Image 1 (tube, rainbow, N blue to C red):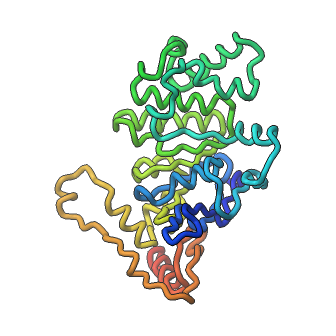
Image 2: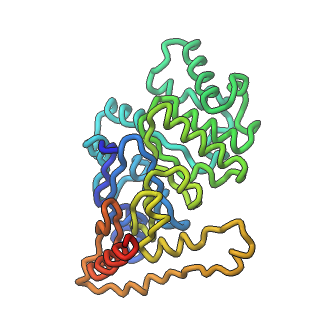
Length: 314
């Protein structure tokens, strides 16, 4: 994973800007996404992770910063043709499989919207075949094409949403909490489908979720968000083995374990942002504590984490 597909630089999305009640939903975040990887983005509800995904794909206009896709700023004004080209290469799977599908449209027309918009089918027959193939790809069959969304379960609807995203042959997909509205028994099926599609089609994912166990399973690297900032970013294995930021430690301590005795006796880590007690000159920023392991911290915290990491590896 050496080729950068996306570069997010100092991205900001503020609501009610220039007012006293300004909300910094995305507050000066920087990270890269490499071709072929799955980057997980986790954090509690309201931390800004979904807003980050929607800003990257231009559903929201950024307040500041850059989103570079293959070196090109996606938030700059573009011609209609260039905008269509961008929209084809970057797609989104939405959180709610009930609200994201038009209830008045048949499945064949829902999936074929992108095909029609981009003129990918030369005939009605080719259009239908493309939809049938997509349905088969996501584990449904051609008979489902003539039905309406209300005739499907939540898991089946999310598969339809995935087929719609795949219809224009994208390179990058933002999966915005795609399993949070599904039964636990269905969640693993959808995640396994995404992993299978990634292997077969060489897709790159930004996987947004609050289920830490599932994010660990699907992600190559994980970014942890807190109040609009990314506070830690490293590989999935390293994050769970050696969390450094106090908020990450608190999040990981909240993961339930299927053992009543263990759950009864274990101690959860509480996080209080006031413990940082930053001063104006502390120069708080993302720092690379160990190779590939970045943490939002002051210089004093950086030195402490550096020493902690050395002691851990000895």
